[in-house]
Image (cartoon, rainbow, N blue to C red; front, side, top):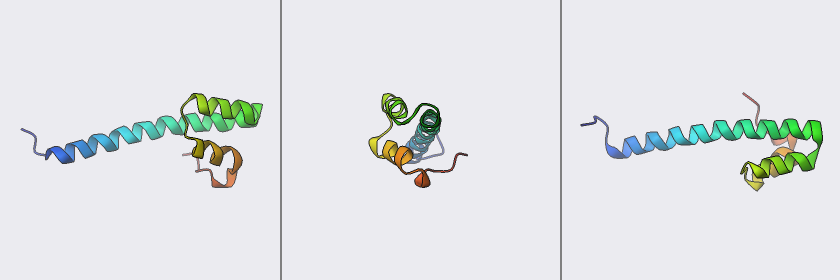
Length: 72
Protein backbone atom coordinates (compact mmCIF):
# COMPACT_ATOMS: atom_id res chain seq x y z
CA UNK A 1 0.00 0.00 0.00
CA UNK A 2 1.27 3.47 -0.89
CA UNK A 3 2.18 5.89 1.92
CA UNK A 4 0.59 8.71 -0.13
CA UNK A 5 -3.15 9.35 -0.39
CA UNK A 6 -4.61 8.79 -3.87
CA UNK A 7 -5.37 12.51 -4.29
CA UNK A 8 -1.71 13.43 -3.66
CA UNK A 9 -0.53 10.86 -6.19
CA UNK A 10 -2.95 12.22 -8.80
CA UNK A 11 -1.73 15.78 -8.15
CA UNK A 12 1.89 14.69 -8.57
CA UNK A 13 1.06 12.98 -11.86
CA UNK A 14 -0.78 16.08 -13.11
CA UNK A 15 2.18 18.32 -12.26
CA UNK A 16 4.58 15.91 -13.95
CA UNK A 17 2.42 15.79 -17.08
CA UNK A 18 2.14 19.59 -17.17
CA UNK A 19 5.90 19.98 -16.87
CA UNK A 20 6.47 17.66 -19.84
CA UNK A 21 3.95 19.59 -21.90
CA UNK A 22 5.52 22.92 -20.96
CA UNK A 23 9.01 21.76 -21.91
CA UNK A 24 7.73 20.47 -25.21
CA UNK A 25 5.77 23.66 -25.87
CA UNK A 26 8.77 25.76 -24.86
CA UNK A 27 10.88 24.04 -27.52
CA UNK A 28 8.17 24.45 -30.16
CA UNK A 29 7.76 28.15 -29.37
CA UNK A 30 11.53 28.66 -29.45
CA UNK A 31 11.64 27.06 -32.91
CA UNK A 32 8.73 29.25 -33.98
CA UNK A 33 10.64 32.35 -32.86
CA UNK A 34 13.71 31.15 -34.75
CA UNK A 35 11.53 30.58 -37.82
CA UNK A 36 10.20 34.12 -37.44
CA UNK A 37 13.73 35.51 -37.58
CA UNK A 38 14.82 33.34 -40.50
CA UNK A 39 11.69 33.11 -42.68
CA UNK A 40 9.18 35.69 -41.52
CA UNK A 41 5.82 35.88 -39.84
CA UNK A 42 3.70 33.57 -41.98
CA UNK A 43 6.02 30.53 -41.83
CA UNK A 44 6.40 31.04 -38.06
CA UNK A 45 2.64 31.32 -37.67
CA UNK A 46 2.03 28.17 -39.68
CA UNK A 47 4.71 26.26 -37.75
CA UNK A 48 3.20 27.19 -34.39
CA UNK A 49 -0.36 26.44 -35.52
CA UNK A 50 0.71 23.07 -36.93
CA UNK A 51 2.20 22.18 -33.54
CA UNK A 52 -0.93 23.03 -31.57
CA UNK A 53 0.24 26.24 -29.91
CA UNK A 54 -2.71 28.22 -28.58
CA UNK A 55 -3.65 31.35 -30.59
CA UNK A 56 -3.06 33.62 -27.58
CA UNK A 57 0.50 32.33 -27.25
CA UNK A 58 1.15 32.66 -30.97
CA UNK A 59 -0.05 36.24 -30.95
CA UNK A 60 2.09 37.11 -27.95
CA UNK A 61 5.34 35.57 -29.19
CA UNK A 62 5.05 36.79 -32.78
CA UNK A 63 3.59 40.26 -32.28
CA UNK A 64 4.73 41.28 -28.81
CA UNK A 65 8.40 40.30 -28.41
CA UNK A 66 8.71 42.35 -25.21
CA UNK A 67 6.19 39.96 -23.59
CA UNK A 68 8.05 36.75 -24.49
CA UNK A 69 9.32 34.66 -21.63
CA UNK A 70 13.07 34.43 -21.27
CA UNK A 71 14.52 31.26 -22.77
CA UNK A 72 15.97 29.06 -20.04
